[in-house]
Image (cartoon, rainbow, N blue to C red; front, side, top):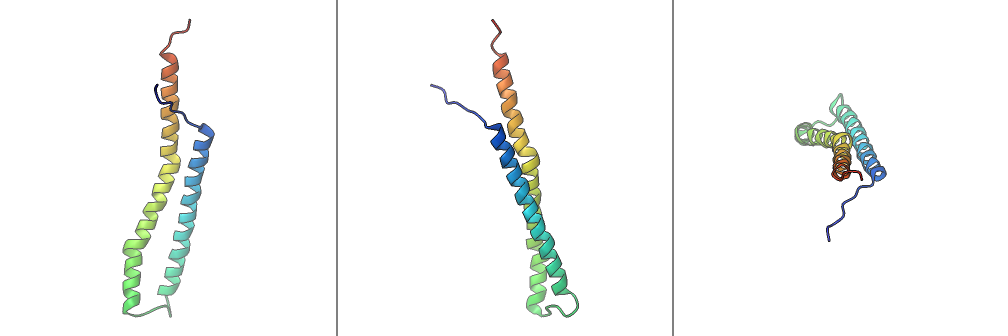
Length: 102
């Protein structure tokens, strides 16, 4: 017996919304973190050898990786979920059209 493959279209929409929600949450974290880094680095902020290393790591490692995470979540929400739904719809349509109407 062949395995059955199916999709819950409404649930796929919820999955896409979940990715969008997480992307928005990461974006807020990035914005908040960037603001706090700027405040800390300005004026009478943290000044020391450790501070310089911290700012460098945050600017060259942490922040770019957070931005890539945000972009990946947005891409997944907008493209991948839709692509999965479209693939299933196309396969279903092709399967239905493979049998001539009697």
